[in-house]
Length: 245
Image (cartoon, rainbow, N blue to C red; front, side, top):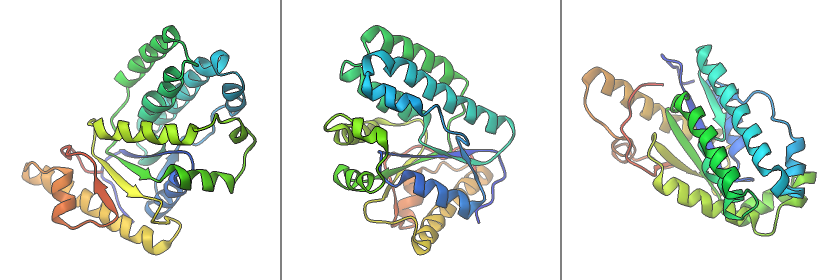
């Protein structure tokens, strides 16, 4: 089990059906971390947002955003180490952006949404790192078909592929904190052996961070990954590790 000296959190990012939530549960169980959000947002919005996107997209996205922000802030305030199932940045830069790009959230509403989001982000701590669960849209759709939920039938054609494109564009420019990728198409995080390897990778991150704090030497996430020959977690940016988990 990984131990932490400071209250902090990791976010797990990924498309619908990418294995993100499964990985979150495994990661929390292995490390004794809590999961946030602990309660679901109002799922009635999921039906509304796809039945009548122009009417509900703004209200639904604001509801999702504020719910997640409150859950994160409460956990930080209480000194809890935790893992977030989908970062708040994804809500803003992927899901809300999709509705804006497709015209189902009009420009005025989107500008208002972004103003609200900026105010919220000013008060939000930055995660220690984000782990991106990368999975092909074809595999995501296959997995979603195996766990059918009523609102999934309302997804517009090409929705998962469009989200995948948006995710890939987002991770290519993300620089707020270290970002690593886990190929969840190949690696099944329900497998204890796979999770053991991932935890070992994460342990190196945390030990490097601790050493940096003691030695005041500048190390990047790439230094840690490449120097220690990581196999399952691969870096997507070169952001300095600033503090231990």
